[in-house]
Length: 305
Image (cartoon, rainbow, N blue to C red; front, top):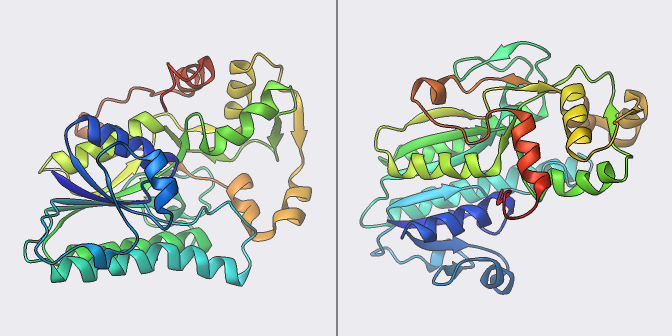
């Protein structure tokens, strides 16, 4: 397949492009930094700086849309919120414009979203049919992105929307946490009762590939492991994987004062279940938090995620 990828140089996208190339797919990757993209992406990937570089007579079989500024990369000021919206919705809208001018329409769009769609949901167990529990900022952001993807799909594309949990691997969030935990300074955040829905990067990449290659895959999927954990359980598991006791705690109030509204990413959460994936027989390589963290902390070879 000829696959167009946005967000292809990020933590998930770079590994996805590597796997797609290994499986014989041809890649077109949208990137604002062609030099950096050329260093990261597999040989043969075509890097474009604008969707206008895709000719109307080009054949694009599938699209993976993972573009978006990091939601935890800065305090949620009004200007930051606009950047978070624009980096997702505007790119998706531009994809729709590209699709409509192509002489041959792509068959499938795999679009990112997040478990933040459900809002700060407490201990309510959530599946793909669950409505948002709280219509907070994360819900508004994810809902706008999903609606933009549905607009693209109206051109006749099969659409898979992935509501992604915290992605674990050597990089991303754990890339920042592991050095801290390895020195014994990792902290439980707040009371530790907030739910933490997660997925190993390798499982997420496999899911994206499945959505691209499986004609029957369509609709919303919760891209999370089947065993969500509380933050206390995650903290203890990560400390154990780093061979440290994990005795420290960070009270909630300093985090709320320092981060403002964004503190919900650390002190809130969602207990999300991948019901559809389980019904459809998706095989998780890392179904529980202990095996995932053991693989990641063991080193690069066993934690390609």
